[in-house]
Each structure stands twice: as C-alpha cells, then as structure tokens.
Image (cartoon, rainbow, N blue to C red; front, side, top):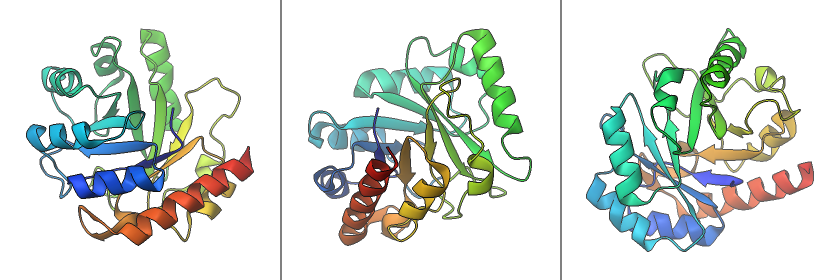
Length: 220
C-alpha cells in the first residue's frame, strides 16, 4: 500500500524527484493518447532508476489483456491501474496481478462504482484499491478537474470495499482539504504538480507530498 502517488511520470528526472520528495508510488501511463504516455523502453529506464520500495504502477486505458500482462511482468510492476471502460470480467482475466480500478465519479454518484464492485466480488476479482477521479466528457483522467468530494464522503469506510485512493484535481493547495473532507487511504495527482503536461515542477511535487502526508497522518 502507499499513501501518496505521483502519476504521469514521463522522465527519469521527475521519477527520482518524486521518490526523493517522499512519494511512495509512481504512475507510468501506457495510454498512447495521453500527453503523459511512456514507451516500454522509457518505462524500463524509469523503473530501474527508482529506489527500492517505491510502488510502480502501470496505467492502462482499454488495453488488451496480453499487453497489460506483458508490461506488468516484463517491467516488474507492482500494480495495474485500469482507467478505462474495462468490465469486471477483465480483472478476473489478469490472474493474481493486483489492480487499482479507477472510477470517474459524476452526477450519478457512487452507485455505478458500487454495482461494479459487487460484480467483481461475485467473480472473485476484487481490485486491491479503488481510485476516484473526476468525470470529464471525452477524457479518461488527467483533466485537472476536482472529483465530487461530497459523493465520495459516502464511500464505505468499514472495510467492506477496497481502500479508496482520491484523485482528480489535487494540488498542494487543496490536498489537505480534500483529505479532511473525504478521508481516503491515499491520494494521487498528475496535472496538479506539473509545469506543463508530463513535466513535473520540483517545488510543487515537494509541497504536494509534504501536505498530503501531513494531512493523512492527522486523519489517522
């Protein structure tokens, strides 16, 4: 498990920076249409440069099972993040590879997420973690829009569902407020610590990690 994840890392410098700042997980985006897309060769360089103990997450959007499994296995990733329209059956086809399932929370609140997870439970393929992002038409994430904190306050905290990772428009300025409002297990940001898409700002990364860790510690 991790508490703070910096996603959409696209180069060695940003990966090392995030880890040095205290981020416990790094996200590598394998969605070709994303401005934060990385090739397998670049992902290998980043993975090899990360300190031991940093959780390595591969983000996929509607990729085939073979691609997801190959990237996970060949790169030695720790988690698969599914950020597209993958059905519960897809998780079951990944074997024992641990999954973060991302959901884009919109006007219908948590109901679609709860139904999806109920089907995962029926299939014996519950994700390890659930990530909540903002729903923005035409985008699969990285929009910079804030998720619906009011809806996410109602995410069950009794352990009946996987731990919640809060994403969606988190910045150094609002991550403390977000943690206090939603009480997630962890937080995730990409655009909120960037100087331009795919380029992390060192000062923003350090401020975000420090603010997030402080807020998460206070919440426990």
